[in-house]
Image (cartoon, rainbow, N blue to C red; front, side):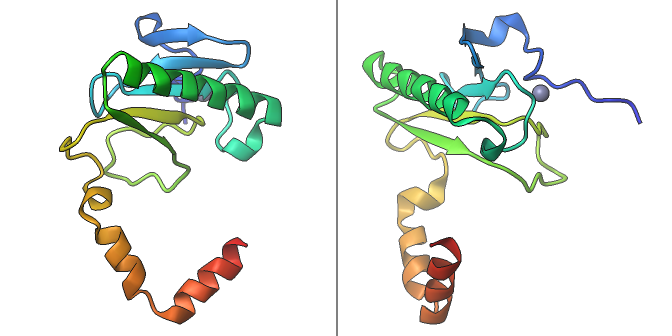
Length: 141
Ligand SMILES: [Zn+2]
């Protein structure tokens, strides 16, 4: 099997926002909305746990810098910061197994991540059996 080129190890220069010592910030492709950015470590790793505290710190400082600029420059009235690790769904548009932080501009009514805006997640939480809530709290404590 041929090795797949990683778009974050060797990003297209046209996408690069900033190069730090340990990270690169990029415009996301595909993007959810204008200004959707990514912060990726220079190391090809899969999970946040795979990089040092120092690199994590630098990545989050960059994510917060991007988030602040999203608001101050009017790309969004707010922002959302996301990190996902597996599963990659077979029918998903992009499969990149290189850690990345999404920084997504948010605006009222943008329709992104709809469940969080309708309150359904809260309703779903209330509907959880008490046993499941207790089991999840114990599993994650
Ligand atoms: Zn990579």
